[in-house]
Image (cartoon, rainbow, N blue to C red; front, top):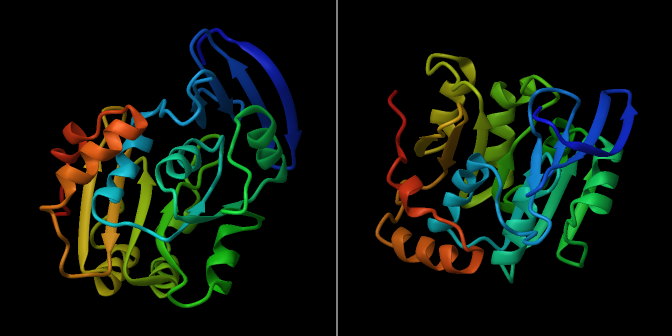
Length: 247
């Protein structure tokens, strides 16, 4: 990491957790060269990292009433979603209780009746979830250096499909896209009718999977322009990088 001031340090059975302040923003780090989350102190709902902005592109296609976030980190995605979506409820699943404590104490995550946080393994939670109980599942499951193996398991794709509503979306953050011949990817094509990908400038690849055949692209520009106005961010150039997955 670049030079910064450590304002909080703790650890649990999974490792060290640091909160580091820089002149413009605050960072959550799991004691590695990577930033798990970023936070502008003067503008809490703004997005520091590009891959979060890419994940938000899904809101150009759908207006969720319920969203599930697998992995909290410093709450960047949750803060932006909560600020933009006035009538959406959120279920956040975070494995590490100390990560949740830090997100609450240092990263100003929303805490109201629309947000429900479970301290639980994401795989177990998604297995126990009710059928058709959420409109979007965001999967961003990482430790200090690696993505959770759960995100490339065949059963994970199946359980997410079961949990999503009829036109639901699964949005996943990958450092490397899964092989299109893998059991996981084959399961995706069996359970999801639309697969899109947007690659970031810093190595992240966001995979969007929708259960519906009929995805309305015409509505996206207007929705993203509205989101740009509310979040004071830029989304349209990212949308133009979105493309179907080559199978």
